[in-house]
Image (cartoon, rainbow, N blue to C red):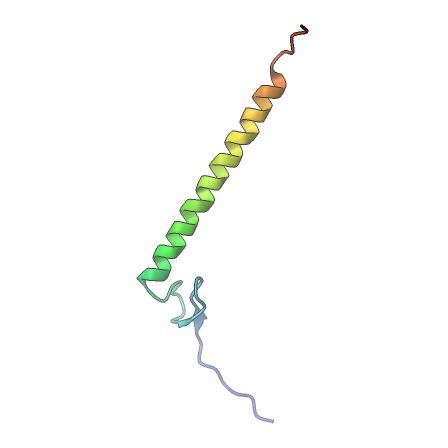
Length: 66
């Protein structure tokens, strides 16, 4: 059995198309999708952090009996 030789290559991180080694995306559209996904993840991280801080502040507030 002979092994099939495949040229050195990489894949686009968004769509999976074959790209040159050292390249992350196949084009500007995939790069824009990546940037948008990064912005969304960053927004989610800040929202989660704000939720944690808000919860900690609420827990630390003194409870006054009625």
